[in-house]
Amino acid sequence: MNDQDIAGSWKRMSFKGNKVWVQTDDKKNLLIEKGMVLIKYNLKQDYEYRVKPESLNPEDQAVPAKKKSASTKSPSKKSQLKPQANKGQKEQNIETDLPENCVKIYTDGASSGNPGPSGVGIVFIHGENKKEISKYIGTATNNIAELTAIKMALEELKRDDLPVCIFSDSSYAIGLLTKNWKPKKNQALIYEIRTLMKKFCDLTFIKVKGHSGIKENEVADFLATSAIKKGPL
Image 1 (cartoon, helix red, strand yellow):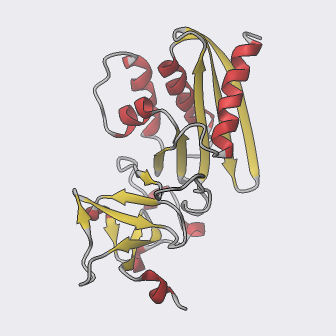
Image 2 (cartoon, rainbow, N blue to C red):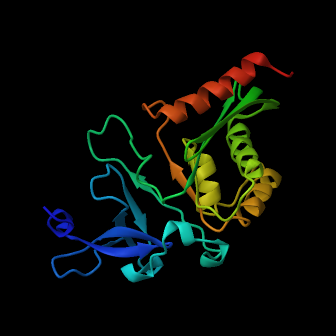
């Protein structure tokens, strides 16, 4: 069975320099629903992503990962994908469904009291390299802890020319940073994060469900709660 047999109502295109499968109708035209098109990096993956049709290009415009550089990306155009789980899915497996050479970051914030003693947990993964951060941040709300975790993660990155995917279970943080919601609170912190985001050539935020079996998300939660227990060092 070849790719075309597997594809069915999908066709090859490129998105942000990466080859993807794009859902089509019976006439092989893009299947657009509510202004968005479903794409997959791998037809066998459990997750689908919605992107705007205008962000897609012909397949031959895909750039091999090893040749990508900051010049192939526009700093002002961030990839903001929306993962959708298949019905009945018990565990979210998205590690292999991302752009090649992507830096994966799982962030979480926790607060005991809301507001109360708070901590952040961050897990960085790039190839075989892995790094973890667990830090007490003093008295804060849970939302501030979630945002602070993302801010610290972006500040920690040394390179801005690689694809970066940040996983968070905070609808509040994801909404503020990908949908440009007008913040009523924490304006200064949100401004700092939005400024940091502009440095990166390809920055993606992915909303995940908390406590649903995603190993790295669970680790980030453990690091955040552990920081609270340890308190200030």
